[in-house]
Image (cartoon, rainbow, N blue to C red; front, side, top):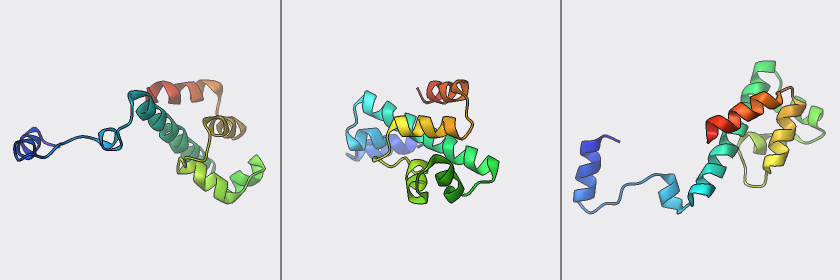
Length: 105
């Protein structure tokens, strides 16, 4: 948001913030959300690079297509453990996963 517009809104009594402010997330919770989003994005990109469907990925992981869709959407029911294990099973290296985590921080 442009600084001028933000100033106008604040002077009119509005409170301006981001999603973390709106949801009242702690810095740790916000970092966790960003980490999950980054891992989910990489999972989707890796799948697309390889030309695989969500069903093909699910078969490789011994899971379901709907579960893969939830992983790619960073659904709250998907654990970080599952995301990392899935990335590794699809060919991501530990170094790649580490870079994703570092960039999300």
